[in-house]
Image 1 (cartoon, one colour):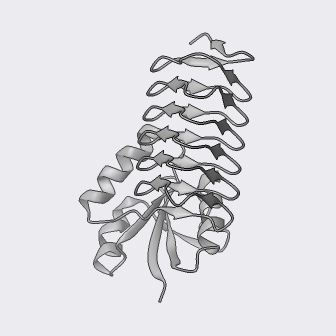
Image 2 (spheres, one colour):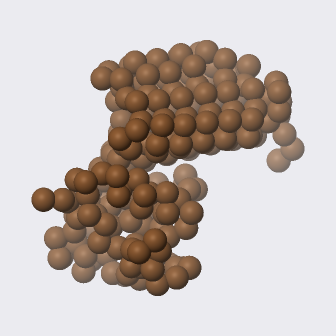
Length: 209
């Protein structure tokens, strides 16, 4: 019997997670929750209302949730609110993703189609590993970080909590990207990125705030 799960968020990332969950027969989506829904139904899944409906869902036996929120700070704040209500957060890995047996994935993290998690990679809680991202051996990704579509993190790269790696970005091995940093789309990171920095370009350089 499939487990019942509510998705928090009905934007673009919500659509991606609906399709992810549809490829995971262990889960049944009971509905979406969003403070500002775009429509009453998204991809055939009903929007149930805002977070005020969550206690009733919990009382009805729905005890798992998936966070479809792109912004890291908002995602982690939502996780804390739902955890206080008693919700759990399964890790969700698309069947087409490649995960080494020694790779670790934290609660609430989602791994989208064709992503690769290499040997001894460690992905923290509530992360997003987006479509086609490659995280090679010994990569470490901190809580709430987002590895964008098609990014390439070779061996030993460290990504701090809440950092964002843009689509198609790449790093040299063993580089560190600090907490809350942003790496722009298509950037080539050859040096350490300080916490909170915004970098872009080839090679990556600090961008104006």
